[in-house]
Image 1 (spheres, rainbow, N blue to C red):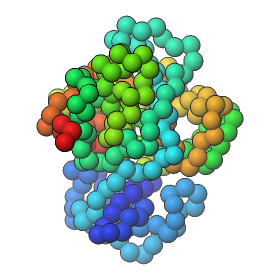
Image 2: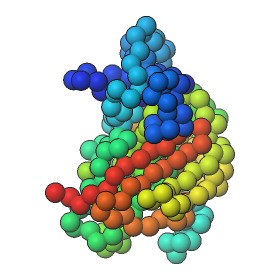
Image 3: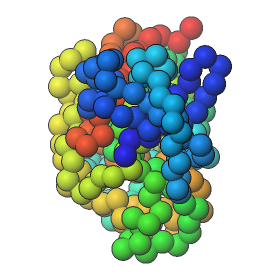
Length: 265
């Protein structure tokens, strides 16, 4: 099931996406619809009888997390391109929820940085409040999956020696286009393109620490709340974004997240 958070007029709601293709652009506007649901997208989902054409609504970030937990260097080839050793355990960092934006929202390049990179990633969305979850029980607390772009000011990451500023600018966590509740995350293809040119291509099977291990590890440190997001790491091929670029992250079984890039005002 695909569940989107959307706005129509002044109303913001969640709904089930019906008849859509793998991304918003390729969807037939005469067929793709969104059916509002009566509650939050976690737990029992109760659809309404009304529908709207998908082309008439604005898709928003699929969740508003209390926190975004990132995982660094979780693909061996990405660690090698950074000339960094492979981690012995998941390397965690936090992104503020104010960094979250949705599909077709604008990534703003801050004046403090001379190099801002894209990082296409699979994002895990928590569906149930949890703490100390065993890996074999992780599926019970996952609400779904979406595409993410862990935008990073690379020069500031190096200069600061820690990642809060480099990862935390407003607009540095695009999520979308929707929440896919039924997905085998163990082996999905991930591709990142900039202006249509492929920059990253990998499979989630290459993750050093898989989704169950990540959910277990993070939940051993902090309570996870419904809507919280775990970014699972990016593969090799990271590179800079520039003014007026268009960057897309595509994951099989989910869809495509696309954002425009502009200099900060």
